[in-house]
Length: 324
Image (cartoon, rainbow, N blue to C red; front, top):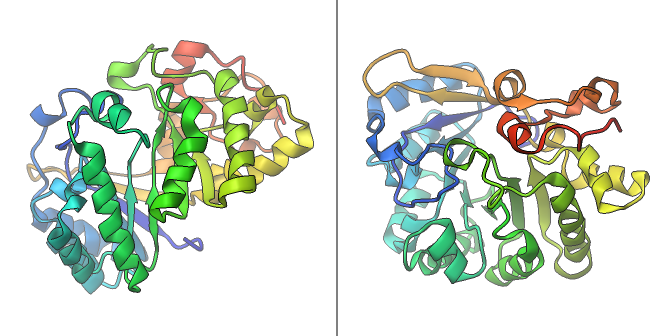
């Protein structure tokens, strides 16, 4: 990102997958319809005038948005240098659709493929039969465009790290490399909506830390991808039983969200002509969605850390957190 100001625009809640951990909720298809294209174009123009040079489209599922190609083309015509999609990847199995997105000006795609095993991806994670094969085919299409010089900002994978794939990160990294993907980010599960209190899906940081360190070491020795973890406070690496110095080094390379994720604006335009919502995502996380432990203020890296999801704290408390 090189520190460039960016905005993420949510197009609606509708989706063609049925992931049980989706933060849009189980009733998302009954929520507001898609935002009209005119509203999306208005937000693109407004944030470009504010100095944003990068834009990402979110959902729901943005590739299911009826006017996604027009939205991408509008962004490019306004001068956004970086135009990205965060997608479940299902519709990318359509090669012609991928070609139209690239022609419209898409420069990056991030695919939420949660497991290298079809039986887990289709049967447990997304609950759509045949979905794994479609996602892999879609990644193949986009990686082919990348090889031709398109998608200059890359193709990455964005799995949700949860109890279903926690023990298989090494195998997932090898799978990603075999596909030709060079960038993987595991986002620690946000236990929202249906998952509040669900220990069957949400591991503790105490449990996850040794597996995270093992995956980092495996990646450095065997795989060599750009690997990062979202939603993991640096102090919890101590639960992996490694030295404070090593924990600090690994956190700087792989966990530091304040460095890896510069502040970004979010726009959720109203579908019915209302005001909608605009906010800075990092500020909202800190002020409303995340919590810090009673001793976090003593940490010398406190300014770089957001704490943990409040809903995570409802399950496991805050005792895992300690000052660095």
